[in-house]
Amino acid sequence: MKNIPNCANTFKSFYISNDLFYQAYRLLGSPKPFDVTLRDGLQSLNFEETFDLEKKIKIYDYIIENYMPTNIEVGSVVSNKILPIFKDTEQIFNYAESYRNINNYVLVPNADKLTESMIFGVKNFSFITSVSNSFQIKNTKMNLDESYNSIKNMMDFLNEYKKQFSNIQNRYIYKDNSEYKVKIYVSCINECPIEGKISTSIIVDKLYRLSQLKPNKICLSDTCGTLTIEDFREIIYGVKNRGLTCSLFSLHLHINSEREKHAEEIVHYALNNQITEFDVSLIKYGGCSVTMDKKRLLSNMTYEQYYRFIANYIINKCK
Image (cartoon, rainbow, N blue to C red; front, top):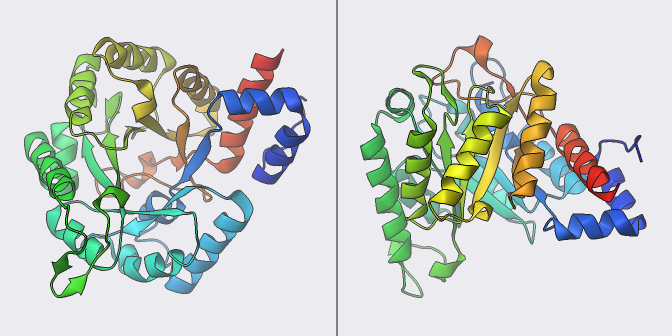
């Protein structure tokens, strides 16, 4: 069992053929990756490399055929002046919708973009905020209170959307208000690239406040790639102490080779606390190029790392 390859197909065939491994995996809640290749994975390449629609479609097909994620972020509805790499988000989304049983997410930064994305049929939304005022202003030109109110307004709009059909700008959008899903990214968990270390109490207060909006997931984003297991334990203790269920949370890690063991410890502790959704990218890029120097950007967790971390966790539990 020590030499399990790190790819998804081998992982799947192994857990199906090994009853003990299979049962342990099921008891974990059968965790699956949340693919962010076509959003966060490409975001930091915006000024270095062009990914046209055809190339994005090939990447999407490859991800679905080889890794079979249930959730995948296909782009972002943002200003083309700021991130022109996402100018074809509507086109890649429309292509992605041809696949069944896949939740295709799109990141939207404000209410206007929410409406725009709904018009072309988006049902699964990623919203963004942080625990750092400086970071939030630089990233979205809103402070933390403005960011919270913006997200609250978007959540209120979705929650009040109760008619079977709605007509926005003379375009029909989806029928059932219960169909949508919302994931809220919270950047700078542990450290901000501008302000430095963030207090755990500030982080926990922010997470609790966001939880009251009742999103489907709140994603803890380790923007600087410096989250330690000690700080992560404090955050988990803090949210539990506020009465929150840890299954509400997911994890977005940025990892360099020197900190891979630290990341694995964090993933294992997350699994111990019923956190079973982790952002993963096919390509070794990622990070917020709007707020951070390119030299500080680190890769998202890769599929190879993800499946190795999960396999090692289960192996240790089966000993």
